[in-house]
Length: 327
Image (cartoon, rainbow, N blue to C red; front, side, top):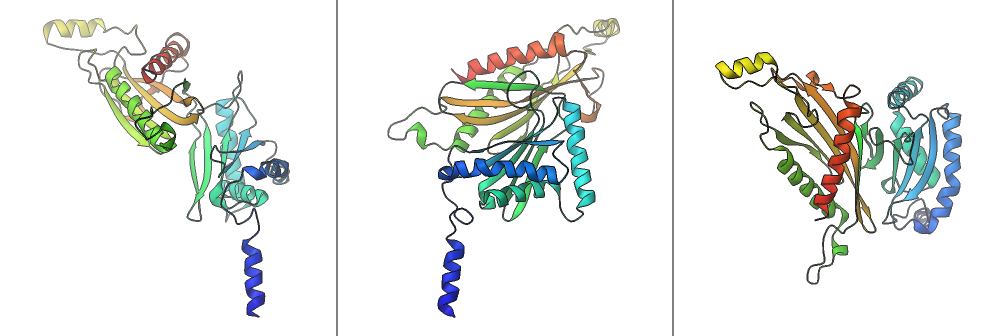
């Protein structure tokens, strides 16, 4: 009996894909062949008209398999609506399970990999170029036997950012080479430089009664989010004080009623063979110049100021930041 039990346990834990947590690169052909089954599963669950299986690929280290799904639309508002409807409909049909859990567990089951070696990413495609729109994403993975989710679904009033830096982050120093620095450490170095640049650029008093500040919102291993508040004539460069404010300034002291601007940044770090790429988004907002609005009191610069002000600003900002990072 004991010998039989030992043999069964040995056989159970020696299955090459299901229970080994090592290099997955040798099995890429197997994963790609199985990927079509995922689309069949989506169809069987009634989600095929809304979600499309794009590809499976290995992360650079070869120890993690990624599944890319896309929402079948090019429109930001439609993508948010489709995803929200999918979540609600799935919950209605499956009260004891969340959509993200089903997407993830089906993936690792079909690929026959340990959950810790898989992740699922949901985007929607760019309309006029390759790749995905960075303003919408859903990331799904597992930690300590619990499915985790990070998402940004209703943030498509943002301008996409993509800055490729053709230079290693860390130069070789003495016997410690740049390749010995982990991607997480490199990302932190880059994010520190981005924040330093932002403070040098924005924390300068350009207007009366304004004190711009860079406020770091959230930093994870590969994502940086921060906001710049209390700006003036940064994006909306043609703003002028009202005649009333000019009169007040002349007789009673400083007055500034020009629109108050707020910029919200998200950067994602992606290591490349020749350096790294920063993707993400920049959302421009404006509010009253007479009082400081609450966060919800700001309005999006799109669409009124998009073509004439926001798009040219984002284009120049990317050039300026790229130049700074490559110094």
